[in-house]
Amino acid sequence: MNAREFNFDGLVGPSHNYAGLSFGNVASFNNVRSAANPRQAALQGLAKMRELAARGFAQAVMPPQGRPNFRLLRRLGFSGSDADVLAHAYREAPVILACAYSAAPMWTANAATVSPSADSHDGRVHFTAANLNNKLHRSEEHVQATRTLRAIFHDGSHFMVHDPLPPVPAFGDEGAANHTRFASSYGAAGVEFFVYGRVEFDPAAPSPKKYPARQTLEASQAVARLHGLDPARTVFAAQNPDVIDQGVFHNDVIAVGNGNVLFYHDQAFFDEAETIEALRRSLGGVGAELQAVRVASGQVPVADAVASYLFNSQLLSKPDGRMALVVPHECRENAAVSRYLAGLVAGGGPIDELVEFDLRQSMRNGGGPACLRLRVVLTDDQAAAMHQGVIMTEALYAQLVAWVERHYRDRVEPKDLADPQLAIECAAALEELTRILGLPGLYDL
Ligand code: SUG
Image (tube, rainbow, N blue to C red; front, side, top):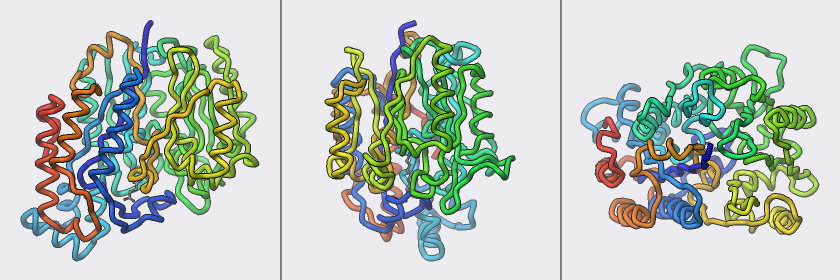
């Protein structure tokens, strides 16, 4: 069956700011309370979408979520008019206000886990919205994420969008950031690879000591069950807890895969040899041969991988069968990574091209190219059945750039979150966006 991988990039919302909300995410912590530029952030993301669409990759856009999250603020006891709620929260609990304003849904790799129809038991594409329950500011994203996915993938004969897992630590789920699919071609039966940071019901299993592990084995197993995956084509592997403690808060900060290629750091997994062997075996079962591109610590230390986001790259299949690696500018600025990459593309392996983007606004909160996109493999029929208004074209790009320029501020600091006008601007922006994307009723604001 002919199928393609669509990348759904998160459109950065108008309240993008740096609030230091993600303990364990080094960039988020380092940039806390600095001034953000939401307009530039959105334009940087759109430039990536446009360039990849222009190069022939299937590209779509995932709309931002309504902010501030008044439902959260009122539930936590802030009352009165909207302006009262904001003033009260800013005075008493500025961190909670920042949570309600977070533009974190831009990182759509965390929106859901997606299994293509070639892997699922019923021939439909399955989505499970991630509960993201490790962090307050992300813990309600699933409400709108589920709604948005159901609006875009509305045809129940092709798509199934599951509710998130129970929002308890045992089922901490961060979506596709800890999930990779391998296959000989997008339309062929594939192997789904889930990487977890801890095991709730086995206290003896490895777990980090300093930073939280956000994904549990129990959550990954539940998603695999919901999607009706074949156990012979599903691999679960433990992440190396030591790298979580060095800032690798999702597996996509230290490994990325596509087709039959796994590009990974030698410290990524708790048991490297066993993990690679399990993948090799499982891929062999679908007639594919794993190509492991291993980066040794001697070439790129973990600290450089985290600082540059080398592995938070997109690995894209080109028509000639080779792959392009989409990296952030930071990779060029890091001497070890830049040296490594020069050798990689010249080395005759599967990756022969680098595509580089300036995503600094997102990177300063710990979100690289791979965080910004959700991969959805669709057959031609499925692609035709989804909502078409989100597919990136030159015309949509131009409309969205003009929209950003009309509605977005070029500076947001912590004190601006108390300004009731910012909330009004955010609502007006999303209201217009629903018309641009042809998704009336997308928001329940
Ligand atoms: O969940 N940062 C996000 C970054 C998510 C990156 N996604 C992937 N690796 N797939 C997070 O830690 C920072 C928000 C702040 O501090 O203002 C934040 O949420």
